[in-house]
Length: 165
Image 1 (cartoon, rainbow, N blue to C red):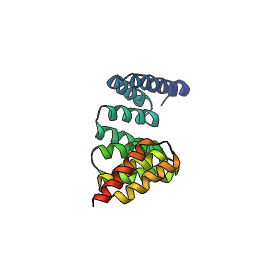
Image 2 (image 1 turned 30 degrees about the vertical axis):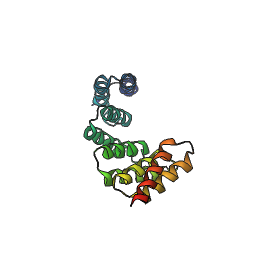
Image 3 (image 1 turned 120 degrees about the vertical axis):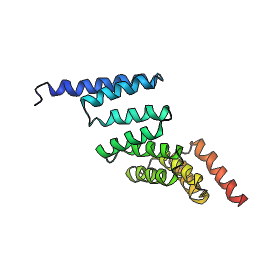
Image 4 (image 1 turned 90 degrees about the horizontal axis):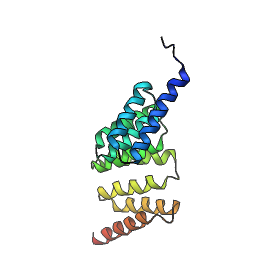
């Protein structure tokens, strides 16, 4: 039976998560992961600690570990659109185009104004040589953010690939 102070319990996990976040911002990813691990030992349902640890794993190109952490964060918080988007990005890095498209689509279903998810889904479709749908996604990203230069560039690349077919 827990007899400690519940508020200090949560604050300790939040403090460790915050320290981990600051270490990650400095590029100290292994140190950050240790701090996120400590936060999760205190509170195993601390979604932000899973999410932040996943980001650190992604920076280290440990995509499978990152995907696992994003998945836990999503299980705890099912409408966590950034976790879907980032999990999709890591699946894209592993060339799991179908899985990536599913995650980007879910992020878009949660937030239809999420330009980055449209852009990323366009990239996954490019990986499948589905240039027509990639262009549709890039155009939507540009509609949402007209200054999205990467979307404009990739749209041009997709259009060029279609002309070569």
